[in-house]
Length: 619
Image (cartoon, rainbow, N blue to C red):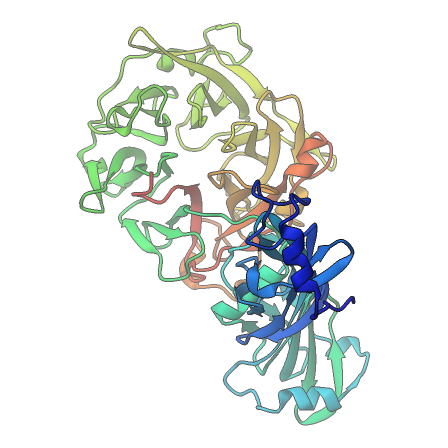
């Protein structure tokens, strides 16, 4: 490092300032009264170590360079650092609990300089009800030993799962394998966090998790666990390592609405929060949908104890009272039907006051309705939704159901089947129809086939396609595929039809199975929808599944209230990342990742039919 000369040079610089312009100078030939060709920050590269919940400091100098000579001009310059890492005051940078590599910058008039600060995050946490305070010392004194019968097995997070940056603190879970004291390590390029507990699971405090997640952003967080028996603490046994990919994506201002079917309520949770979910509507027994603006809900209900024909109700959010108003009560039996979807704000109408909704009707057609009154709105939808799906407009007796209106309002995707019904279906294909509002008329185009059944995956035919859902930019459609009819419980299990998710582009030119998302075996994966808004690295899909959530929810450990209608364990809400980089290469390889359990939901409830949209009141 060159040392700044502290004698004579400053006077020389002042003399230089009177001689005219130098590189980077202001129009008057000065930079804050001092004339330099360039500046630099020292040290140019530094490393500090900071503990969870603590801070560390690094002191800098700003050196001005002119005519091959240096001067310390720190006092005349402004130093700053990325706010995600810390703050700067005069020459001192203070960093908190965020590891990684940060740019430190200095500004002196029009001249700038940069340095690199590496922050390594460390931490030791002792959690759990009976964990000894000296757990770290016990593990440090133990000898690592290999014994398959004594090795803890990581159960959650799932290896290679991808998480949004603002996912709430996750619960790491493992099998005990005869041990009663555990050491969990969380490591990435710039952090090493050690957690000790006597429990078979551990959750970091919110602030600590935020620091860990932020430090691992854009890379893999390695998770491993060691176990030992406190009665014989000289040997310890280490699990294999799982990797949790922490994305750069932050999912903001969104909420997930789902149906807690075992409780009969539609409930909601703003993403990123873990407080008790809010009940939006109780006494629901059928399907629901949300408008993309988050201002309207359509639901169906069995009325009078009979589910031979369900009835439609509509709710509208009142931003003045901050409440949901039931503008159409299903108990009044005005509109009989099942599935609903709403036109987006902007097409056909500029605001929400003139909203229209598509409803699956009991006669096998779909109709257009006013969600404020349940009155029919004139259109050709009832006819064309029953037509052949080859674009010819040929009359047929097909059934249209499970519609989803695109975010730009120009098209609708739905499941079209030759069989009847208005809730259950078999032999469905994914169809698409255009939409226009012309001269005051709602006009739907003749349907075409987006994805035709069957689809063969691993030499198995999936003959029933349903629950299509547009991505927020309308580029892709995710949908369900099954080997048999929707809700075919003939074998006594809801997972028997083999429901799984697949993906196509909006033109239907390719189809790919989301195998990483679906997991191994039949896990009753259903009801897919997308996170709203725009993210950089991934699309995000929410769905419901009977997948095990570590050891917290399994077939052998589930709430009895969930075991109904063939469900073997509490069905829960999961989210999965869909890689935009892999999609750019075409629908040739699976772009999905293993999923994450949605924190904040009730693990003792059967949670299904999730919709991801804007929170009510945020427009």
